[in-house]
Amino acid sequence: MGVARRQLLLKALSGTADASIRFDGLRSLVKALGFVERVKGSHRLFTKRDVMEILNLQPRGSLAKPYRVKQVRAVIVRYTLSEGVQ
Image 1 (cartoon, helix red, strand yellow):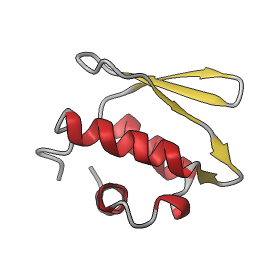
Image 2: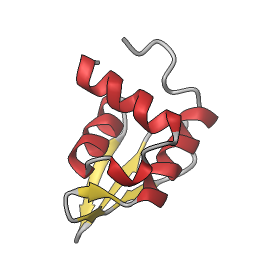
Image 3: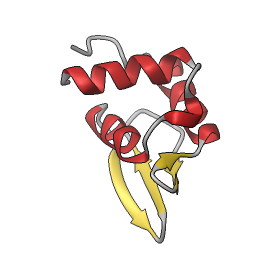
Image 4: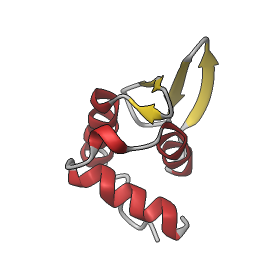
């Protein structure tokens, strides 16, 4: 994972900047964590083997919706997906 994605991961995990995370960055991060993307209208649905939750991301302008960032953070923590990320 690149430096920019690593910084975004840390920003998302901190929970202090949910309203300022760019949608494209969050989408890229989720894909880098091994999720597969499916598009349905303005929604981006992400699934991953061994992860029960489906991540449903939508943009608010160029930013990700804050409650969706919180959802992504909860899944990363619950499944310890950030372990081993360079």
